[in-house]
Length: 150
Image 1 (tube, rainbow, N blue to C red):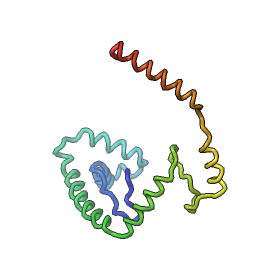
Image 2 (image 1 turned 180 degrees about the vertical axis):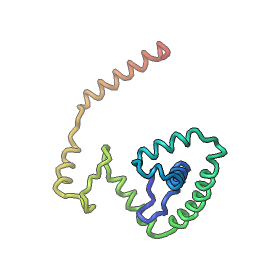
Image 3 (image 1 turned 90 degrees about the horizontal axis):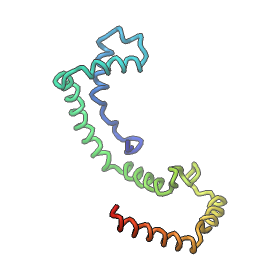
């Protein structure tokens, strides 16, 4: 789920969640159950309902989605959103393969770590001879596959 910033409008609730709230407000029997038990009970009822019965909840979602789209479009015009977007894009580019940020929590690069990590980035993992050998083997394999028509 993509975020649009800390003060972005909240996304609309799903039709099932509207149904769950309605069930909880209508039935006193559900008060004693945990949330997971309520959800499980309501899920069984929801699955047995027809599309026409569910349509009331889908209509609420559609109306709320239209209002959300308008609010989001207005929010995207604000300077706050533009600043958040720049900050978000910068943080995405600063992330490594594992998804972890290479910067510390203040957003400043740690100069000591950066100095050592730049030295290690220059170390070649594979020798040029190995890379050439590997390319030749890949070409041979590719040619064999062509001959066999795989």
